[in-house]
Length: 257
Length: 192
Image (cartoon, rainbow over all chains, first blue to last red; front, side, top):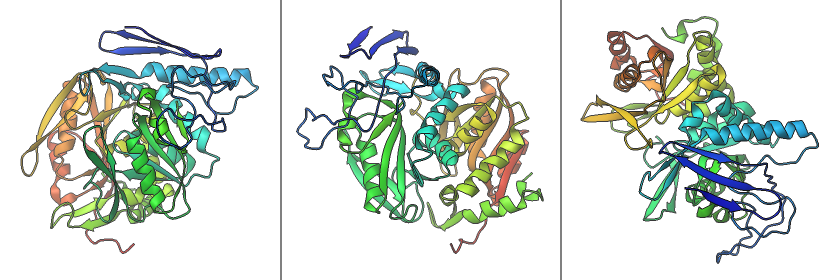
């Protein structure tokens, strides 16, 4: 099955191929992403201004704002070679991710990052791309959402010298915790963080492998903000734009590879 | 062997040990829970932890590191990245999409199951199993069985903490595999 998505301007053509149950190839050309772009108003009833990207059939007049599931590193550089290197890393990363159809339920295309972890170069590139973005942003805390956030968060934290704080399902963390409930498609769930793990005034990054509806990330942001921490950005390897997670984050910036 | 026996890294080890905390009566009364999250809040101690493992394994030709959900996911990937090995997550049932192989293992009450992706590990891979803590050794043995069924050679199991009374080391020894830990558990809750 082929899905062709066309974006205006001269930026992106994305094609999804399936071959059997296994490997999904995504080809993309260079994209750009910047958190300074003008915000578009959301189609939904939300009054919060919406960040860029993640949407199809985008009609922004802005010249370099069109993003899709995968967006490139921030500031465009005049060094063409540097951009090529980054493009190569991104394409290697995207081709290392596989899609499993009908998991966990029929109709869902599951984005499986475990194949990325089997490619040491691609995995390292993934971490490097995040580290390059955050190393000079004075981040003191990296918060990772259980369980796949535990795979990406700690290497980033180690590289930038930040603390790593795990956000877990209920009753996993021992000792005193604070909880945040969030809604699922059916029902609610909860995540917890240790009391005292973070202090007021700290600057935090929230990491997960993937953003879908944004519910988990929003809950994680709430937990941090409730104790006075500034959430600088959320970072994920993958975004599922159709599920509008970026909108749900509102004015919190989101960076995805 | 445990790293505590190594004189040179003694300073590091003390820093790591003092960063751990013990929570009494979690998850059940009578259990002294060894909490590594406080270690993760100390960037230097966390880095030292990873560095000690990397030092030990970087020249051992390890091609795959297997981490046990979920705290093994915190320590495994940084080691894998540093030594250039693949990282393979071992998970509770139904978390991994696609084809998996499963291994059941016995708990104090009842049993549990660990799964690994088919094809993640190949015949001839040299593997390291990483978890935060070894208690009875049941989970580590299940992990080793999965690896061996896939044709890999388990070089060693590595944990931050060992709870000696629960005899995990003996259990691994009877499986024929060595265990490397950084610290042995403390029984008094830390005052910090």
